[in-house]
Length: 296
Length: 316
Image (tube, chains in turn purple, red):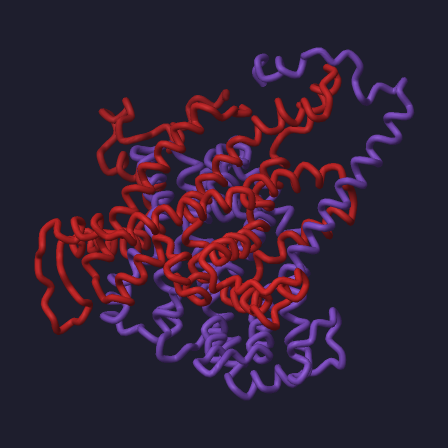
């Protein structure tokens, strides 16, 4: 804490707002602030959720009511889901998407953990340059790398396979950045102690670092899983012929003779459902794990 | 530290350690190796899947090739770059990308900070519920989000027009199409930005605010002179992300819904790259444009990082 940082707060306010002598202010002002907070956050929250609600509301309307504007779909109908079920192989799509998202999420977590550990626990030559190599991937858009990568996957013979959608995405700068911050937050003495115990760097990673990062790793893992689940363009390029993941199947309902809104909304709803459930169940832990990292 | 006889920990032992004279070379290598070994898997992946293609892109930018394996690629020197800068599309796409970035900043900076500050006043379950609602769009797959917004913006049956009582064809008129792309993309990334700001706020020691209020600062003064400066690393991280990834975030929407139209109004730089490669099969032009964007973004990012390093406060 530098003195000049506090200096501006010394300016001319003689009486602290929370002075215990000023009973009325202490009571009334926080409540007013809380009301304002509730109103603003509530409205914003509703605005954020409306499209999501509309997605499920539309998917549950009977096909003849699809243009209805009533806030609650009534009578409820699963006809759109039945139609979607008939049009695409939903179980297969779900399993494929699950495999892809799990493998990508775990792979990114592992490479991120190893790299983040290296950056946080050692000081070595070219450290900053190598860190920059990771960050600079944000400058290279997918559209720049797609043609050469497509050619390489074709040589490897994994086009139109799930493996082709997984392999190029096993490392992400986001995981490296976040895990570097996380590992740094572990007290240095803990790592030193492990070294004095004669543990190798490898065993320190798994017996000291990983157990200490439990919640953070889980939160980041879920985030990476969600990103991979929602990934569209790379699978779209690799799986052109099979369209074997959920995000691609959505396109079969958008045709030249018009969009089939009902089944499209039903499939989109199903594509979002696992992620939403995962989030609702783990919400507290995801947010806590993320927030506690003090990502900066 | 009292245990002085313990050998120097690896982090102190770079290849230039002064003790090198007495230690055989293989031990020095072994001692310096761990960080590099831990970096190896990630680096190998990046080299193969990001930097190797980048190098091929550099090569490709000096060639004329239509992406067909059977037709030979012809070296054309700097011709692709000359053509690129002569194209009116190119400058226009850059301008639109700048508009997109500026349009997204409220969603990635202003609103998340407001939410983060307001959420501190609202305690208990309600705050958790509001946060969950703001985060929800982040979970929606971009294509599913694009589909539902297309449905809501439908000129005749869409929710937006029926509620507002307008007849705007949002996605087919140039001005409103760009606005729609900004709002939908903003809706999508707001949750992530809010999460990052919440993380940044949680990392600020609350003792500072307590100290400030003891010193007589009002809440607003504490926020303005303490919280925001201490939050500046988070804010610069978010601005950098917005700058670099804005066009990328809007890409699914542009690609599946507007296809860059109407009359090019939503064609940002990444859609332009996509269009050069797979629309007009002009691989050389696409590569040249990709390279220009890579260098341009690199330069802007460097300036931004330097700038924030000079301006940020650090809590250490």
